[in-house]
Amino acid sequence: MANTNAPSGLSPVQYLNGAPWTGGGRVYCIPDTDDTNAYAIGDPVASAGSSDAAGIPTITLATAGTGNAIRGVIVSMGGTKYGAALVDPVDLNNMFIPATKARSYYVLVCDDPMVIFEAQEEATGTAFAAAQVGLNANLVSGTHNNYVSGWQIDRTSPATTSTLQVRLLQLAPRAAGNAFGDYAKWWVLINNHELKAGVAGV
Image (cartoon, rainbow, N blue to C red):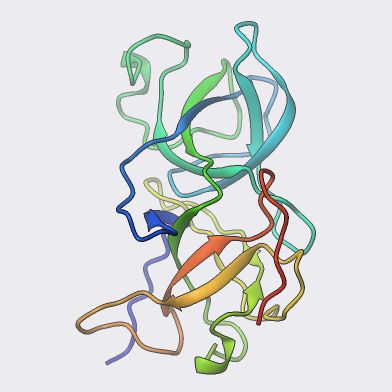
């Protein structure tokens, strides 16, 4: 049975020590000056090197490719004012943050470098096989579907290189419906993480 094509970016599943992910994260600000990137749950982000007036760190959309570090992954949308309700009334119909912004937005980011994420393998190029388990790979950006991220794992990049973005830990365990091939779902660790050094694959 073919794998289902259903990208959703990176979704946290558990900690590296085997404990279940508890839903935790930290609040970050996407500034109103960012009129380039749209954001959805599951998108990887990187530090923007500044903060808002309250000292909340600013972020930008991560860049796919070797050497581009990742701060974490958006796991929840927030309001447009730090300390306000989780979702402001003007945003009740929006499941994503638009590219053109009239105000800043706040999001919850899973930025713990020891969290395992599930992500989908793309279908372009040669499919990963058992021999790729333990290697590192890059991500490839994708457009959200109005709900969740469209980012996937890049097939063209598996190697031992320590500056690749994610470590391929294993196929996501399923009773059925997930196998090596197009759109396979993988458990990965962010390898090139802003809060830890990258490790060579094996």
